[in-house]
Length: 259
Image (cartoon, rainbow, N blue to C red; front, side):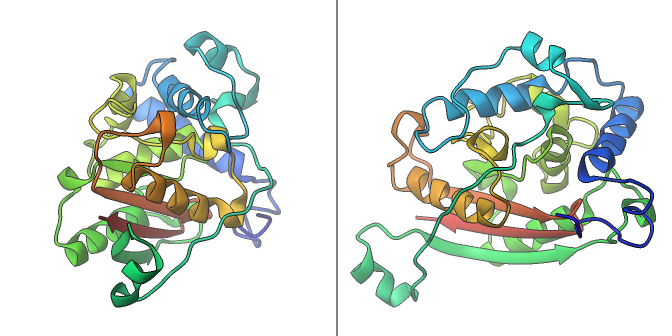
């Protein structure tokens, strides 16, 4: 994590992942006139889904009041906008398509994978509120899988911070620019919504074990696609997308899975 930001300029100046995400959130709020409670559903949804995930770190519900009254970490980011760093381990078994059925009666297929990069320093990007690596990685994966974002049943994104979840929704195509917060505010990110996210609690409430986080997301996608997600089960999903982020979206990996 110490090397997630620029070590020549940003880190010596005292920057942290929280402060850089706070800069993005402040710029977004100012540009798009987001109300004070505009981001609360990202945390509320994650904690709601974690309640019924036995592997989640947090099993406590959130209200908008609790989110808004949580301690300010670096304005405008509050404690409940941040994911908790935690311990954790996860594993997946990879096999050639021809062998998968012999190993597992219900294999989940990797339909596409793509990785993209952006300028390391946020200040060097033409528009810091556009997650270019997220957009390019997703679009390439869609092309390789021969699908569009409208065919995705749910999205396990990198919700390390509320603002990062919001910007990913826009970059991938689930929301217009400046409308990612509204997708959350309208409830479209809930399990019964148009594009469910963090269906098992996400990084925010399941926890963020750093190197294991994307594998956790993969395991949770497999649970959903094979109807083994328990109380968190979505109704018959067939295609899911995962995005994992390095740094402040300097590197973004997209996987699309299907059954």
